[in-house]
Amino acid sequence: MIGALITTGLSFILALCFIIITFLKQKPNKKKVKQIFISFLIIFILFLIGIYFIMPSIIVPNMLILNLLVAIITVPLVYLLLMGGNITIKKRHTSVFIITGLLILSIPAIYVYGLFSLDNVHDSIQTEEKEQAKPLNKDDTPIAVSPESARNKMQKSMSVVPNPQFYDLGKLQVQKMNDDIVYVAPLEFTGLWKFIRGQETEGFFTISATNVNAQPEFISSKMQYTNSSYFHKNVQRVIYDKFPHYVQSGEAQIEVDEAGKPWYVQTLYQTMTITDKPDLNDLKVAVVDPTSGEVALYDTEEAPAFIEGSVSSEIASLQNEYYGKYVHGWFNSKFGKKDVRIPNESGTEKSVTPVFDENGEMYYFTDMTSPKENIDSALGYTMIHARTGELTYFNGEMNNGIMDSEGAKQIVNKEFPEKNWEGSMPILYNIDGHATWVVNVLDPNGLFKKYAYINAADSDFVVFGETANQALESYRIALQQNPSFVQSSDGADIENVEGAITRVLVSTKDNIQIVQFLLQNDPIIYTVNTTIEPKAIFLTEGDTVNMEVKVRDGATGSVESIVIKGLTD
Image 1 (tube, one colour):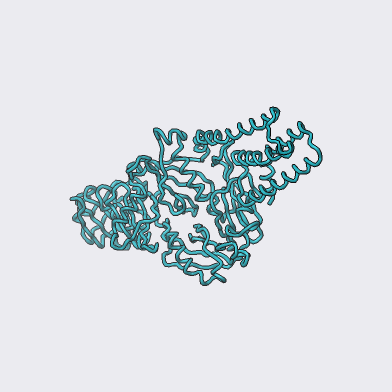
Image 2 (cartoon, rainbow, N blue to C red):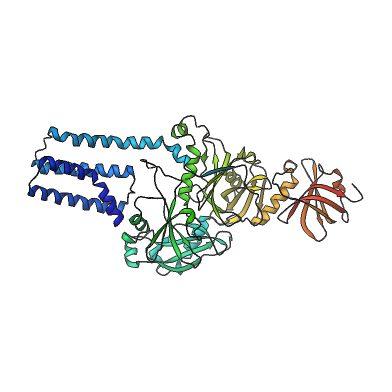
């Protein structure tokens, strides 16, 4: 209630100033003062109730609008009470109405100023540009379970919840728990009556985001303060009560600490100068205890370690929009569009998709495309750190002229028209120096079926696999067999390998012979094409070879040079 009181009090500053000025000029008697005070108090209470439910942030545009609204209601009322119903405006009172008129005109002026200061919002984003990302390795497991599938499985498990008719699933959030990437979704009340009857929710669901065969687990953990609770137990109102001068970004999400306790997490920001535009260089996160309602405020990067997404997906989407569209301001985004990039809408959360790197840190991925219609090529992609908010833009040569995420999804959609399987959650990876779209293939129910690895520079180069590792290995072998992709730029270390051949397979691709072979007591599949060593086509079992090889993840080896004993030495 304190936040609403502060906001309401600030909303009456202009009206109070006008009334004081009027009192000094009119010197009303006690009866009129009492009437005015009662009227003023009634209006104050009505506005307090409205602000309690609406929760407008204390920012300049909001305060200007509220002050004008209060003044437009209260000042004429006070004037009528003082004049005894005579509405004739005397010359000495016209200044009040002139000031009010000027303030009304200032509202659109502020919003126009906000449009022309969008380049300042762009500049407030922590950014870094890189040529290309680190290569994908076998320990990087893309998220396989779609949010739709996870939510569907959780809904079907609602029968394990006490009084399931009271609840529905809340916002789905991905996070790392006990070294596993999981979706987490709290139970939320379905309406006011259910809240009055239940008073507290029963807990939350979790389900693996990487194991397509996993089933949801319900964890009992009673919560009084939730997104769907009403009045003083609503999470948004709890945060507003403490920090009304911050703007809340989207809906609060829950994250679970090491002890299994859930916390509601909400990203906050302040606006730039007199506008309603966000200052993206100073993000905060509010952490709410759902059992006690206690709230703490942190810088996003200083939040407790168990919080993966102190920067919300809503803020990440905003960052992408401001970074891509307003690089040279609002006018350029509408006319000329120099250096403008448009974020694609292929994400699983708003326009972004959460991914985890090899260190277990979460990022939001989005690819950028041209503002020109009917162009499906990517201009690069962004990765936003989910705790610091730092945006990294990858726009190196490897990412030039490649298809965008929508194009990658369409390729998958065309592969299985009879089954109505569709592509979902496309993410761009660097695989052995090649930009590659990794796309989940889902059935009409949102259930995972396959991985698709699509070379982003060649829409005909597609490999499918049942698991991430299987698809990755198959894709690497296909790369080595394709003469167009022999020279990779992944920077993998070259190793010297010697051994006796036990198996040989020769195939032809685009009139070039590709030789694959195994060595004794060595699980790696080695690949060499005849452009590197023409005599490799004569390899047979029992030959001894000495090679320089780029080995990737202990599964495949690309031969850079080879000496065949008795044949090339």
